[in-house]
Structures are given as C-alpha cells and as structure tokens.
Length: 394
Image 1 (cartoon, rainbow, N blue to C red):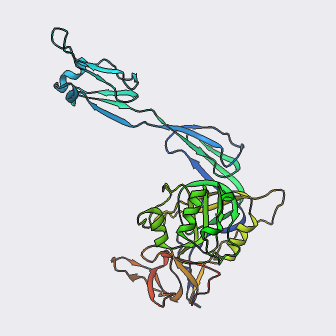
Image 2 (image 1 turned 90 degrees about the vertical axis):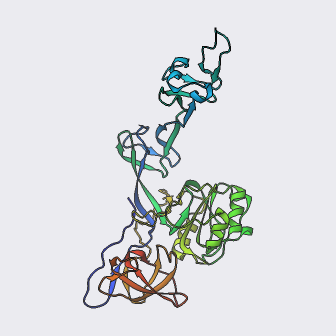
Image 3 (image 1 turned 90 degrees about the horizontal axis):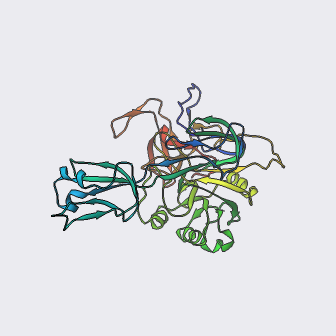
C-alpha cells in the first residue's frame, strides 16, 4: 500500500527537471496495511473490528520438519524387505523412543529393532528407498496487526486490511523485523551522534531515537539493555559490518537475528536526521510505536517504516507530507542515491541529459549526472535517485 516506485520524468520546454519519489514523513495520514499469512489459515477478526498493534489477527501452522530414517541401512536388509518389518502405519503419531521396526530374527531369536530418534507423524514408508519419513510437529505462525486500527477488509483464510490514522515515517535503510516499543529520545538534536553513554537501562524495550550516526558501540549497548529498536540519521558501513559480523550487502533485509531493529533515515555515514523527522519523533516521545527494518531497494521497493498512533484526544490538522515534497528535480537539486554501487551517497544534480544513455551493462535508460560531496561526478539512472530536502550539499 505504501511502496514507492519510480515515476516517469515530467516534460517541459522551459527548464530541465524530472520527477522522483521521496521518503514519506507524515505527521497525520490515513494508512492501510495488508496483514497476510504465508499460507492459508484462520482469520481471527471480523470486518469492522478495532484491533491493537500486538493483537493476533490470523494464525496458521507451517508443516513440520522432515526426518528421513534409512531403515534398510539400520537393519541391514534390502529396501524391499523394510515394509514387512515396520511396526507402524502411515499417519501414526510417534514419540521419541517408540518402536518403528523389528526383524523376524532366526527361529524367533537375534531380532534387530529400531526405535524412533524423534517425535513425529509417519508420512511415508518406502520399499524403494527403504526409508521411513517422519514429519515433525507443525510450527504455529501468528500474524499480528502491527498497527492499531480498524479492520476494513477480511481476505478469506489469508488475512486482513487494517486502516488507521497515524504518524508515518519511512527510512532509507534498516535491518531487523517488526517490533514495538515506547519512543525515547537519546539525543537532544538531530546533529548529535548516538553514543553508548546516551543509552541507559531505563530504555529497555523502547525505541531509541538518535540524531546523526549511530555507532556500533551504541548499538551493542542497546542490545545489552534489551532495547527494541534504534532510529537515527545514519550508520557507518564498517559499524554495520562489526555488529553483524559480515558484509550485509544491500538487497533484502529484515530477517537478521540481532535482537534489535535498526532504521536509518538518511544513509551511510555521519548524516544528521532532518529536523522535520526529528521534531516529529520528539513530539511523539512516550508513545508506543511499531517499527519494521525490512528493506528492499530493487524491484518492488520496500522501505523501513515507523508507525506512531495519532492521539485522538489531541487531534492535529490532517496532512500528508512527502519529505522532499514536490519531487521535482532541477539543476542543483539535492539528491540521494538509493541503489548500489553508490547507495546512500548524497549530492546535487549536475546535468539532466534529455536522451536515454547506454550504461556499462549495455542497457539504455534515462540518466542524470550527480556531483557528490567529494566532487566526483557520477552518471546515475534516474530511477536510482530521490530528491531530498534540508541538506546543504557543497
């Protein structure tokens, strides 16, 4: 519902410019979210129900793990003879240690037996491979609402669509999945680096708001105290590598098992959070928010997101703000590169060639030239950049 996708450049005869999507930062907007099971199951709510963020709205069971047991080898017999020795039937529920097979022996003596090494259900008994396959217990899968709101549509046996009035912020990059916590400010200004000494035990289970770069030491401290997440302007790629223990690369994230969700709003490096974003988070201090670090920067863009319920007892004028509002690109417009190999770099538009150009890959596409902060001029496909506001790019 809220994925952005590159738009076609607007044509004009007066001044060179184009259109590009930006990150959404909205103080008050109507947001819809599809919450769907990975396989069919049971939907636990009805259309019109009011749900809480942590409420289970649908559930199912994923098939259990498979345990192949080679009885032909274990009992030293041809595979074709295995079914005669098996003491269970397909569909039987087996416990660890239960008898699965027994040979006839010689004159009723010297029998060989085989007991199950695990719990499961007998799925197949094969006279071709001589194997029994046990299927482990099904794994329960629950889908949470993720944000408080109203169920406006029920998708039979799959999930729901939830609608809510919220404050909504998109980040540029994140790691870790869905989590929840109270918003707590660690930095006083959007230009302040998030260091470990700014994090304390009282921030357990909270979403810590930084300013500029989040350091690896700060992330480690947040993990140690049990924080739910961190949101800040930037992160150094070496710090990220140090925390993860490997080079992440930039493709699809969200399944990392750090025990914390990280969202950066601007890019890699010591980059300050825009004042608008910081002020919105600051004004939401003490509010329970939902965040998701999942990121995908290729086809079907997925942005990390922060969802904050709007306080209905203190309503504010409804607005939908697109950070980097107009999206119009002109010569000198500040931009950020949103795909590799220059992901996260900030610069300004140097030229806007009107005709498609051939890239090193051999493909032809509409491009622009960006002069980045170190003075280099890069030729970038227009779909790989977004306009930004509030940055003084030299």
